[in-house]
Length: 263
Image (cartoon, rainbow, N blue to C red; front, top):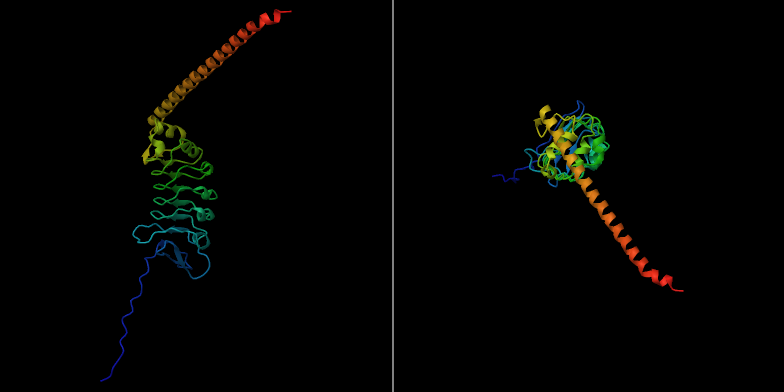
């Protein structure tokens, strides 16, 4: 009888399912997310010429946290989806100068100022993040057509005014932000976004826009009246102060008069 050594069956550690991306004909990289949230890219060589990358978290166990590898490996990407991940730092995205469509919804983002160099952006989805404000550069994106900002922490009406400076902007979402709880917020949004046709997923009618313009004009008139009233009160206080000062001076003058009359 012959004896033999039986090794246990080899069971390779399963790798995460590859993320979907559109490949160039001459290269077929696979993109993986490690357990610590780092993107891992394997490719034949060099940088890749993909223009579309879908790195959304749907159906994956591990979520993307760090995206620093993107600019060096996919510098020509135009359409990038990172929805549903744990991204906080958008600095690497500022190096993707060809970006036209960017989906960063459902992440942990507080600041989008690094996106300023991405002047070709046409569609920007930032819903369900932690944005506290909108940087001024957003109003200078002349090609931006869609900007989705619902479910953030925007609280200042000036954020809406910033977006109103985008000449091509036609679709905006602002629902579930603190600023939309302010009195007249919906009318202010319509008035500040004159070229927007779709607000919070609903088409804006001409009647609704006229009503908003009328309401905003009425509000501005009321504000002007309040300021004029406050200014009037301040002028009265100044006049009363001047009169009181004059009475005090007269009293002092009379008190000194007998003293001056003595030789």
